[in-house]
Length: 246
Image 1: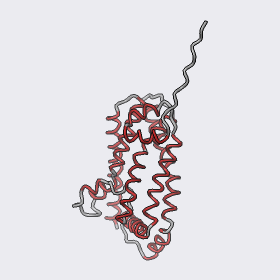
Image 2: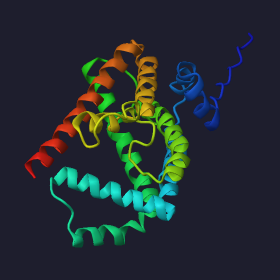
Image 3: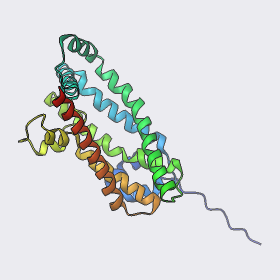
Image 4: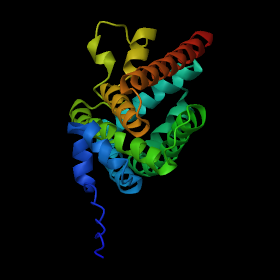
């Protein structure tokens, strides 16, 4: 009696093929990722790109001063009070370590936030909605969708270096679409927090979750974007409220 030979499992696409696929063909790429989830390598690649992109603009004197000015603005906006000479001196002395903080901070915070968001999605889809995906699969979707954010950071770094500006959302934020808004106003603050690549990455994340759980990606994207806009709206109100109180 003849025996049927076992068909060996086909290896999934490599690291760089997955990264490119997330940009060019996310749905087809996620179909492969959920079959063979590998979140660690892509997380390291994303963290490396974002860390270098965040550190480079602060490696120049102009970038360091821009980062310091941005920190002062954020502190004054949040506290509603001007930064005094002692506070400014402390910030200035620490600013020379900006590239180091950017490198180390990215490698510390990105894995933590990846795990947090993967945990939220896992609970929402598996517990609340009855899904059956593994946590590793969910984490793979989250980490691979961060390729879009890494792309935004990579493209934004040379622009920020040339312009001598350093912002968390980068140069591709919605505030750039409304230059007529008064700086520091609620609409300008709100739009300035929202990066085009954040929106793109959220949509890609929704596509991955849709593929993983066989649900409508458009609906997931609308919900996720609405939650992000609500979050940024709350942050804007908190900043504005603190400034008014001061």
